[in-house]
Structures are given as structure tokens and as C-alpha cells.
Amino acid sequence: MAEIRFEKVCKFFDKARIIEDLDLTIQDGKFTVLVGASGCGKTTLLRMIAGIGPATSGHIYMDGKEITDVAPSKRDIAMVFQNYAIYPTMTVRENIEFGLKNKKVPKAEREALIKEYAEIVGLTEYLDRKPGTLSGGQRQRIALARAMVKKPAVFLMDEPLSNLDAKLRVQMRTELIELHNRLKTTFVYVTHDQVEAMSMADVIVLMNKGQIMQEASPEDIYNDPNNVFTAQFIGTPPMNIVDMPDGNKMGFRPEKVKMSDVPVQGCYCHKGEILTREMLGSETLYKIDCGEYTFMVKTDKPDFAMGEKVFIHVANEHLYFFDAEGQRIRKTDGENQYAQLLQNAGGMSNV
Amino acid sequence: MYQLKRRFVNYLPNLFSDILKLICVVVFVFPFYWMIITSFKTYGEAIQVPPTLWPKNFTFIAYSNIYNMGINFWQYAQNSVIVTAGVIILQCLVMIPAAYSFAKRQFVGKGIAWAIVISALMIPGTCTYVPIYMVMAKAGLIPSLWPQIIPHGCNVFGIFMLRQAFKQVPDELLESARLDSATELQIVCRIMLPMAKAALITICLFSFIGTWNSYFWPLVMTNNDKYRPLTMYIERVQDADVGNKWNQVMAANVLLVGPVLVIYLFASQKIIQAFTYNGVK
Image (cartoon, rainbow over the protein chains, first blue to last red):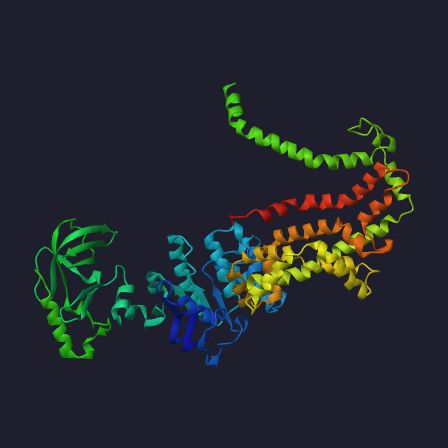
């Protein structure tokens, strides 16, 4: 169990500034997911926690103790790498045992631990095989067992599911959630996949260009985004964003849009023509040409055809407003201003 | 019939290369064959014209003759074994840490240090005889086996090859090992070396052959039969007064080359592995 705190952390690679003056607290016992596009600094943060990629400046604390310059082996952490990083010349057993042996755990205890964790990840019958003879999913489990057996205070995972096929990924996802529920330790998980982040996290930390865009629960980050970047990064397809005449921006989620054959009064409503239609099973995805913009619409109504003329409308409570810099304008920021924005949005309707 | 013809037509492009391979095999293998069968001939048959391709009287007389010549074979053999083992052990002790730090560690002056190491490859070995002899003589080491071991302790080509092999080990493995509380020594011994096994075996084998067969170096560096290796034993077996007893010279050669052949046969698979890039994990 451990809380991790970053204080004014910077990381430069040569001249490139990857992370600058970053402050972040990762809560004890929570499943925290660092998510963002490639190169946003999320893996760099993870490697700082592990101690294998030290910060250029700033401080990192674990449970209040500074660990900025502590050796990786003395940090009580375990890490699962993207390519698993299991030792190819050792058997599964030796892979799991390696860290315990180095920590001078007695043999009898080691045996018991290996047996216990091999069972948890379902590798008991493969203990004497070399990793090269196992599948991707099984290798992933070796990496997990190797991390778990050390009983660390913090689990670090660097895109551990990205090398698995889609079906296995979904399965491992639920297994990781169960694992977290069982161990109740701090998990820090890095991914670029927002679906993974949404489905697994207690707390999502969304990053962009070394900055934290928002830190919130999946529900909040989806329903109450702080800025345009967050609004567009989380959710598939991303939020539709429209420039307003007053310089602000308006956004609405594709799944909150209603479609009809006739215009609707009292909300944002726009006529358009269906460009593409993707049937996804329970939902259907439409791309709609509304003149200046094309909007994505996700609805449970599959019965509109390509080329059909329709009206889209979004209820006022599903409209989001952002200022010119992309920062969110909430109702709590000023009732009058918000009412004005709503009125402007209604004025943008085109029927 | 048709199938036979098709197989022949398909094979035709390979015919030429197969013939070349066969010629190569004969060129390389025949001297060994000749050495071995001559060692089992009598002296008369060994110098007979036309020569025989297989001994008429298969005999061990050459071996027993050289054994009874009054030259202490075992002393020479022991020197060869000690020198060769010493060189290989010393080379490993120098080469493995050097290759590891050049491949995986960052330190100040790494580029310059590497350039210096590599530039050692450009110095012709013959230039080093006299200076090294003088150093050894000044140190009072000439009446010992050390002059045959110490100067070969640093195998630059070996450092180069092993560094390449170490570079192929992903950094994540090392990071993972560090998280697993492994020391640098454990990382090298448990992770790096097992993954670079083929390269290491190849380097050691080359060192073995080079040291085992070296003749001129021990000739310069020794002044007493007590410290001379097997290659110089062959020289002793040759008798300049009555002409060479070729069957005996060849018998001595078999004794010299035998261990190399045996070890090479065991290690050849590893050598091929080390020299061909293995793309399949």
C-alpha cells in the first residue's frame, strides 16, 4: 500500500522537454490509469516511479518518503513491461523465482509462493517450460506472476495488454480488475487506449504533451470534461465540437444526439444528410454532413439510410461549452453567461 | 519416369554449386585425411612413391616410437593445456565486463574508450613481440608460462563480438532484473551471458584454436623445454640428421590437432548460430 506524489517533476531528453513542473498524487490502493497519446510522457512518469528513468529535476515521494534517488530494487514496486521482459533463457519457474532468490527468500517459502501465484495466473502446468514455447497470453501471465510474487506496495504496468489479440485483451482486462480487487494495492497503469482506461480505472489521469489535462474518475472524466482535449480524447467516437459565433466552442457527445425526420424546437437542431452508416450491433454510427461541419451520431436506431435527409437535435443539458482556449465553461461559472451561451446555441440551429 | 525427369530438371541449377561444395570439402578435408593415415603407416610406406591412400600395414609404430624418443610428451601437453585454459579464463574475465559496459552502461568517455579498444585491432601482432619480450624479461617472467598467458589476456575482437551480442538483449530485461533486485554481476551471469552463449562459445573456441596452435609466440617467449607447448614438441620430433620420419611427425600432429577437432565438432552448431542472425524468437 502506498501513495505516490510527484512534486515539480521535470524530464528532459537532451533538449526536448517531455515533462515540465508536473504535480500529481497517485492515491493509495487505487487503480490509477495514465492515459494519453504516444509521446505524452505517461511512460516516462511510470519509469520515474520505478526508478529506471530518473527525473531531471523535482521530487518523488512514496508514502511521504522521498524516493527520487532510491535504487529500483529498494522501492517495493513491481513492473509489468509492454513486451513482458521475461527472461527467455529461464523457465517459467525460474522467471518467477528470480526476484525472490535475489531477495534471499528461503527456499521453502519460495516454493510455496511460486505454487500459489502460478495457480492464480493458471500456469501451474507450464512451470518447467521456457517462455519461448508459450503463447502471448501465457507470457503475459508470467510477467504478472513475477510481479505479484514480490508482493509489492505498488504495481506498475506499461501497456501490458497491447501485444495481445482483441479477445484476450478483454479477458485480461477483467482479470486485472479482479486482481486489483483481491490485492487492494496501488496500481499504476499506462495505456494509450481510452477504452482500457475507462473500463479499468478508479482514477484516470489524462495527459497531453507532458501536462495533466484532467484527473478524475471515469464517470467524471466522461460526463464532466475540463477541456476540449479531454472531451475529444475520451469517448468513441469523440465529442462533436462546433465553433460559436462569439468565439466560444460548443460540444455534444455523439451518443446524446437524437435524429428525426422533422425539426424539433427549443434545443440545438440542425438539418443534415447521412454520409455513412456503420451498424455495430446494438448501436448504429452515422456520419452526418451538416454543411460547415460533419457530426458523428451514435444511436440505437438503425433504420436511417445513407443519403437520407435528417434533423439532429441535442437537448440543452447535453451541450457543453468551452472558451476560446478550450477550457470548459460550466453553469456554476455564471448563470447568466451560461443562459446566454444556451441561447446562442439555439440560435445556431439551422432547420 | 516423367517425375524422375522433373526432379532432375529441378535439381540442375544446384548441380554446379554442389560440385563446387564437393571440391571445397576435398580441398579442406584431404590434408587432415592424409595426416591421419600417414600416422598409421610404417616409415617405408610413408615415403613410398606412388603413395598409398590407405595403409597396407595399419600400425601404431609411429606413436610408440615418438613416445619412446625420450622427449617428455606430457610436460608439453600439460603446458599447452595450462596456457590455453589460462588464456581463455583471463580473456573471459577481461572481455565480459568490458563488453557489458560498452554495450549497456553509460559512462564518461565511453566513445573515446571504445575507439582506443578498437584501434588495438589495427596494431600488427608482429610489432609487439620485442616490446613484450622485454617487459617480460624485465619482470623476470621468462622462465614461466606467464609470457604465453598475460599478453593474450585482452581479446579485442572478442570484446567487439560480445558487445554486439549483448546489444541485442533488450534494455527492458535489464530494467526488469534491476527491479527484481539483481546485482550487475547477476544481470551479466544470469541474463546477458545465457542470451549471448553462442557468441561467447565461438569467441572462446577461436581463442582456444589460436592459443593451442600458436608456435612462434612460445618460441620467442621461452628458453626452456619445461615451458614449451605441444607445437614445439612436433619440432622436437622432427630429426634433421637422418631426415624426417614423416609417419612420426604426422602422429605428433594428430596428437596436437585431435583435441581441436573434437571440440570443434561439439561447438560447430553454436558457431553457426553466433554468425547467422536469428530473426525468429
